[in-house]
Length: 332
Image 1 (tube, helix red, strand yellow):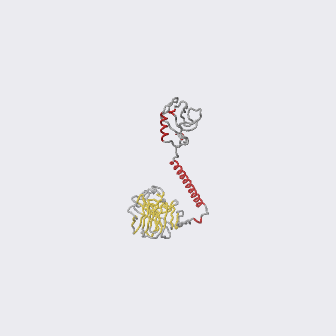
Image 2 (cartoon, one colour; image 1 turned 120 degrees about the horizontal axis):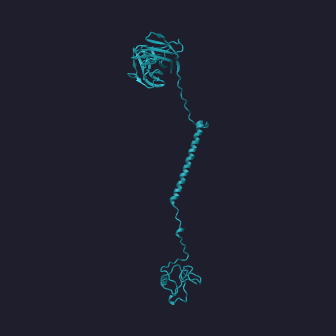
Image 3 (cartoon, one colour; image 1 turned 180 degrees about the vertical axis):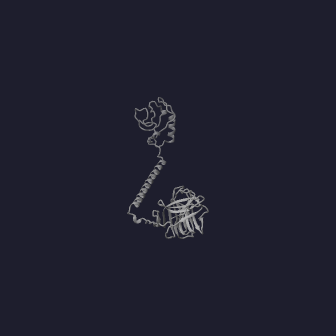
């Protein structure tokens, strides 16, 4: 039979339309005034008169039929099935896709940097430890060796006839003593010096080991350079109580070069202990070292050459007693 509502064919035994689901009426129960015209299935859109008739039919109470809903929704034939909300998938998040793209770019850049760094390291190792690339290496400058000082004079005082003066008149003593050379001064505020029979030199380095042999700590001891006469020479001195100076002898007077008084240094070993004294007279520069430490440097141009020697002195307390050993004179 044909459904009077949707115009589609349905089974004769069905009480409802297989297509639209409406109740189907018995022809014997339908009065002539309630006859419902059929709408062809091929009609795409109903005319206004048919739409009005359908509206009237929807509001008509049909004998023997179940009550109808006041709102009827017609679903056209062939309309696609509407998916449920659970079946609808959200669109792909473009932000996530962009992040994936940048993540891949970042990983790629890291890999490239690692490869580049590895190449640089390999090339550096090859360049540093292989002789293959020597032709592109810049030549290494060979430093000019420093001239080795030559020994102009040396004495360890083991030979009693090595040429140092020997005297003992009570006021001062100069003599070989216990493998060294001893100088004693028994007059207050007095200085005495000695020098061996040696050739003169312009530039020289004079070194000696000096020990307080039992006299007062208020004393002085040192080495002479450029000794020209008893009135013209330089010397570097230290004291057993920690003072030092570079001194110039001129016209019978001593003067501290670069200052008025001698200075104190804790680099000097005090008391009855040994100190290594070194005085460099090179050009117009005079440099004093004690125990390998530079403690004073001055300039003076008056004396250009001379001999080396040893010197001691007293202050208010007499009895300065110094034992010298291992004197070296170098030419730089």
